[in-house]
Amino acid sequence: MNWIAKLYYKIQRLWKAISLYIVLSGPGLVVMIADNDAGGITTYAVTGAKYEYGLIWFLVILGPVAYFVQEMTVRLGIVTKRGHAEAIFEGFGAFWGWFSLLDLMLLNWLTLITEFIGMTSALMIFGIPAWVTVTAVCLLMGFIVVNGRYWTWEKIAMLFCALNLIYIPGAFIVHPAVLDVVARGLKPNFPGGLTGQMFFFLMANIGTTIAPWMLFFQQSSVVDKGLKEKDISFGRFDTLLGAVATVVVAVFIVIVTGTVLKGTEVTDAAQAAALLRRTYPYAGDLMAIGLFNAGLLGAICISLASSWAFGEVFGWAHSLNNKIREAPWFYVNYFITLVSAGLVVLIPGAPLVLITLFVQVVAVTLLPAALVFLILLLNDRKTMGEYANGIWDNVVNGGVVAIIILLSTAFGISTLFPELFSQGAGP
Amino acid sequence: MSWRRAVTSIGGNLDKVRAINRRYAHPRLTISPMVRVCLLILRVYLLLLVGLLAYKFITMVIG
Image 1 (tube, each protein chain N blue to C red):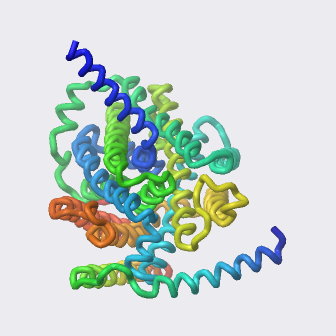
Image 2 (tube, rainbow over the protein chains, first blue to last red; image 1 turned 90 degrees about the horizontal axis):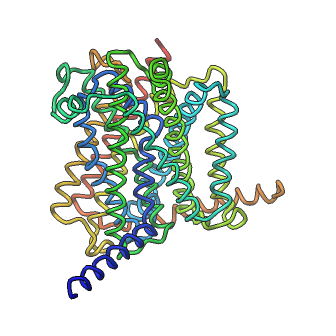
Image 3 (spheres, rainbow over the protein chains, first blue to last red; image 1 turned 90 degrees about the vertical axis):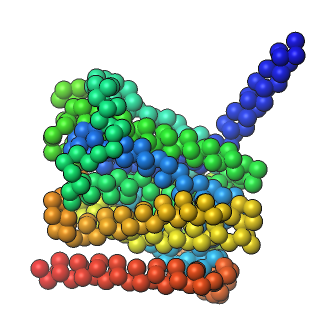
């Protein structure tokens, strides 16, 4: 009877832990899955079409990379109870604070435009005009933030996260040769050699895995959710689960396009979806729906990241738990960012391709700064106490940050000067 | 919100910018030699990158 009592006790403990995780989960999962935004889906779709399954191993490596970086924001947010923007102002003074805040605002706005580009091009496949998509998205996103609290918003966002898994059935529809995927995908190699173009693709995949808005978003998110020091292990697990989910989705997108579109010149995810529909209508539809969902999820998170950052620094009420009357500037910022980005997509002849490229360039002016600040803040023992980075944290996280900075900078420069990468036409 | 209130509110935010500059005039983080070097490298990095951006922009306009 003793073992039955012990088993019952263990099950009870496990159930309690799961229940607690369900309550505390959210920021890590949402930020990681939203990382597979419209730009990310395009990068993975083009990577699959270009190199088939050859770079799956590289995407698998990027999972831990994203986890190590984002885990630091969890600790920093929970211990300081401040968002990343406010932490930079306080830690490094007004100059670096304004630089980060204004750069973030510009970058998020430009990225938001790319999300709208993704969403409108995805729904155009189904014959829905761009203005209908933009209007519907703005109304939907307004409804999500205005009609609820942080908890409601987060659960709706997690619903969209679940929809991001749509690429998994999509991959099964196209019947990939599983053994082939495993054999060629998980063996580290560079199909065609480490050429300029291959380097460009590697950098593009890194660029889409670690984005500046993610640091700001997750830190603000754990603060708004009210997580405490005792919740750090749950926050870590949440981030880890999100990192696994984001890699799984990325791998399945590569499998879809690598199976059906191998050798085809693909420039974006919407084109990939349209091409897929010719041979596998359902897979093409799922790709288009997934692209729209990815853009929507990205837009939801990115517009909030800006509003949170401004609210923190200006001292405005900046919680989703506040009503519009209580936090007018928070919501004004949110809607201006959202609606103006949507309107840009509707301008006839707007330089959308140029904007998409410019996003990468602006990102490399903010990402290294945000990452360096993150490492330095995590080493501030006076504030972080026992949650400060240890030696191994610094070795691993510092190494990851150094590699990201080097490669993302190379990516930004290659976007500006493609001739440096002789064969380097971007995705 | 009337126009008068909106203008007053924007003016209030400009005052807030000044207050933020005063509040964060001095970094709270201890500026150790390592932090100083990191910030210096960051400044050089950003200057180089902005220089490259400006070069690209000028060559695009001229070309």
